[in-house]
Amino acid sequence: MVTNIWDERGLIPPIDQQNPTSNNRSPYKITIFDFINIFGFSQKRLELLDSFLDFQKKLLDSGLLIHKQWVNGSFCEHCEMTRNRSPNDIDAVFFYTVNNVELYEININCLSNELVKKTFKVDSYLIHLPTGDANIDIHCNFMNITAYWSSLWSHTRSGEWKGFIELDNFHIDNYNNAKLLIANKRIEING
Image (cartoon, rainbow, N blue to C red; front, side, top):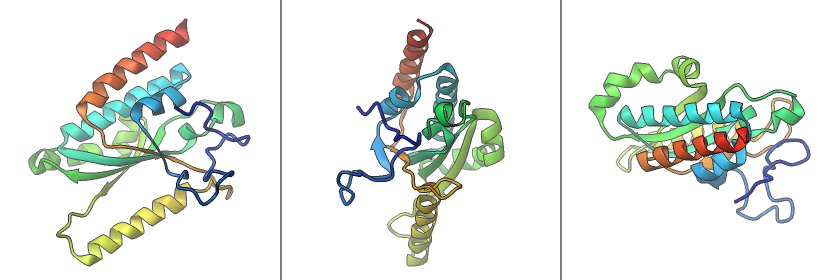
């Protein structure tokens, strides 16, 4: 597990400087457990991670299957060092398919960015993955959306290159075990 993920700027490097053409580059693929261990080093961050997990469960309960998640924003920066403050939320793009159309239609209004940010402290963006039978225009649109997010999240607002995190698919076992990990880290931090 990587523990020192940031460079001297307090950012995740976009590439491996020692081997810039390697596959070891942004987005960096890690498990939810490594994500909690790396980024959950304060009570405030653990609170955000707890809410992040609750939102992921809400997505599952709303009939969605989460296949990939891209995570970024101040949560993935060492903003305690660079800005003298904790992050306020977690920015995430969720790549999903609909598993249960009925549940999804009932819950779609609960998944709005504004409501999710207020309730779960997650600045969320939901991207529906096209199915194999989708027409070529839908696939091309998905490619454009993916390129947009990758490009947007590869730089700070001031234009500095940076990396971001990719989490694998999410299921209920991850939720329960991750909640336990957060509880244990809270105890560890409190001493």
